[in-house]
Image (tube, rainbow, N blue to C red; front, side, top):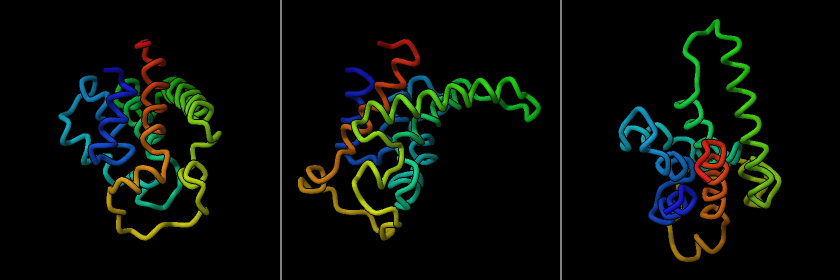
Length: 150
């Protein structure tokens, strides 16, 4: 199973978008899956259903930071390298997802206003009404390609 297929399957199993992307790369992370899922849980719905940066994009940045992040606040070269790679990934994600954006509301075709904090039931209609399964797949594919897993 590819990273993209795994991310899509995780979403369809009930994980939110950032959890789906991050858990598709769990074997590369310096933490267990439960911790990774908990850390990403508030980023769903474009950060707590605020419909801002897409959770799939947040998941990509989490994995990138875990693998290539800096820990020295004076490491300007490390910051520049990380931000360069991050911007490249976000741009590739916006191009790949078919919506040309990394903003949740834009991807869902919804107004840029927060949604109620109560999550929607994961019914067949829920999955048919939104592109999220394909969006998390796109994010995981972009990240896998960046990591040389094509």
